Amino acid sequence: MGNVITLMEESVLSTHKAEMDTLLTSKGDSQRTQYPYVTGTSVIGIKYKDGILMAADMGGSYGSTIRYKSVERIKQVGKHSLIGASGEISDFQEILKYLDELILHDNMWDDGNSLGPKEVHNYLTRVMYNRRNKFDPLWNSLVIGGVKNGHKYLGSVSMIGVNFEDDHIATGFGNHLARPILREEWREDLSFEEGVKILEKCMRNLLYRDRSAVNKIQIAKITEEGLTVSQPYSLKTFWNFAAFQNPTVGAEGSW
Amino acid sequence: MPKEHANWSPYDNNGGTCVAIAGSDYCVIAADTRMSTGYSILTREYSKICKLADKSFMASSGFQADVKALQKVLSSRHLIYQHQHNKQMSCPAMAQLLSNTLYYKRFFPYYAFNVLGGLDSEGKGCVFTYDAVGSYERVGYSAQGSGATLITPFLDNQLKSPSPLLLPAKDAVTPLSETEAVDLVKTCFASATERDIYTGDSVEIIILNANGVRRETEQLRRD
Image (tube, rainbow over all chains, first blue to last red; front, side, top):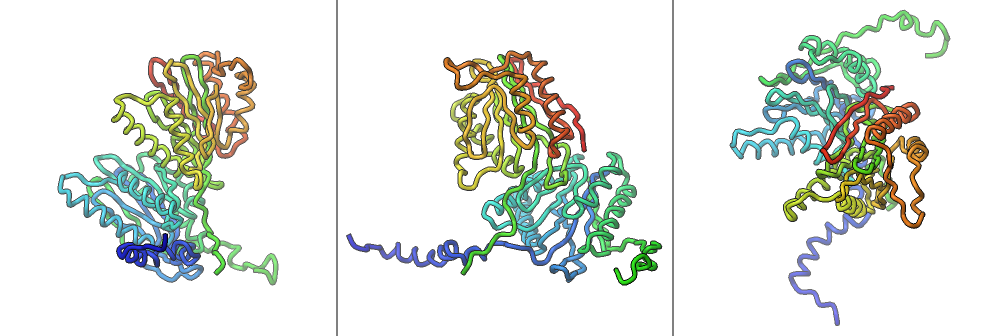
């Protein structure tokens, strides 16, 4: 029969050869995300009387180095939602680009309708799950919160697509250190001041025990009226425990 | 060049237990509402039960993201069926669809452990039980998920199901009344909650019969 390849087939083959090579050889695997590089730590979100409160610190760690100290990890999405991210910062920036395009197209319909937090959460869940299916995850844990038409919404998505909504959400270390505090102290009718106090209590706890936490936090508030992100500020900490004054008194030579 | 090892797994087990019992003219489908990861509880109020059709309810435990995707695929397939046939899918038809959908991903499975419960075309209760890749059979009752090993022997004892190997084939549907069956399910979950760390918080029970659908919730231990 012979090797008969038409001119068109040949050009198609050559353009795709490079692409196919990367997928078939082990070089293709290195294109997939294996580990995160610059990461953000916990994000905490709670529902309160008028809407949603979300808190995160401004740290971006490069392994064990706290490399960046002014990373905004809570951002606005459209008119009604907030997104907070922990995990790989560059993947979060890419997610923000996807959301930007999503909101843009939503606005271009110009039909008076706008995507609420539930819709944004659903969209992001699908994005994260699809990337996981391709073995190339966006290495983030996301918190989406907002208010639309009087309905408060707070949800979470992980890097493999696990998603749920609840009255209080935390990612990473927050799940272990903040959630128990929230389970004990959260109420349906928290005022803004009470909500901030509880979030600060959680963030302080994380500061003490999470080595990748930095003492520079932002608290974001979203209500039916709109959104505000606070200026960065620091929490007061207490280190004056007697055992810290003379730490080796019980065992000289130890730490 | 040696192949690198991924340091993440595309799967996670979010725990939970599902049970379904078929009666002569009803079906009970139940699942706990706890969602966990590792040793942490993510949320105490997550529903694992999905209405696929008027007379088909699916309860699934395992990896939540896969369960959600599976529910979406089946729901949209049912919508297409309704457009094409102008009627609801029967429970046995949905059972076959679920099996095919699961096997379709035989080489990257949905990590979902399912029980499908509903009423067949004669109005009798039917329960179908599945593994992660779609092998299924119609049974009188079934439990799946983290507490299944604790519940199944108890159900075997209480419901005295005839052996599927008997000839002529004996119906496995229980002679218990609807209220007795619901009570039995509550007992199952209360017991499983004691010993299975992934089961607890509350149990959601769906009762399907000729009159329609009823939903009950019962609080379970939260520890």
